[in-house]
Image (cartoon, rainbow over all chains, first blue to last red):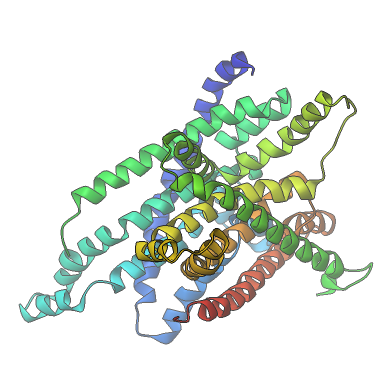
Length: 225
Length: 230
């Protein structure tokens, strides 16, 4: 055990954790919007729209995240037309490519989580709302959404942790996130175990915090439905 | 389409064998995962606090740390560890372990953590009366486990195990970083030499979709077979 290496690499890894957290938070926020949008499309009665939303989530859940990042980072740059548009400013940056891939990926999982949360709301609540003459907009915002949030919290907590682990793939497109820096230190010092303990410890600490925040929220929103 | 021709001109045969490699790694990893699950599930259910914490540490660490980091640990640390063991026995040459073994082993450890949780959940949701009845009737240990507990456990575990299979299958794409030529690595090579990354990575995505679709079809059949009532 090389304790000195562990101590000296800790600040470097902690610094890289900032990038991991930035990637995670931005893609989770974007993913939440995408997921919400597609969840609503999934519940649409129009078959075509429904199929489209299902196809989106099927493709993004059925392929590895690594393929998605590679298609966006290496693949899209190949289309000549894209190079002339303003999109190219975004797509030539590995940071934004990673964020696009992560957001689309977590969006697909989130849409499934939200859809099942919306669909498991007992019809009695909606009927009760309607028979009281509450406008459907208010039923949606005041009845459906709070219940859906409560029901999707445990699954969404899992998704956040999966996404935290997913951000490690950013290191494959040259970003120096926690895993990227860890790999760099391992390949220069050839001390994989020590670096793994430090980097893994940071990841575990983050999962621990996320886990507990979700638990707290579950308790807070734990009203009976 | 020319890019997919079999033979020297296209990448069809290479990609075909790469797909077989992905399947082979996934299956090996799944089996290694089962072995780990068989070792750690009893620990997680044990009443002994020490054994219990070993089981919990395994599932918590593996499920909380990115797959890529675990793969780097085994990729960079695997041959070192084996050389260390070999040096105890007086063998001091450089040993390089096969990329296939390192890959399947690291993915296997990851998939084992998920399988452990699945088996634990399944065992815990079997009615207690079943265990008691089997004991009271005086069955020997073999019948107790293989004829009474295991069939009931499998029935509860199979739907979740098919999720574990999906995760494992997708995780195999990550071992391309170690140089094992599976779908991702082969696409990377092909994309590099033809300068057509969009086509090859999209094709890789199609291959993965096909694999997940076909395996889901098979697993659903298995699920209906095992979910029959007794």
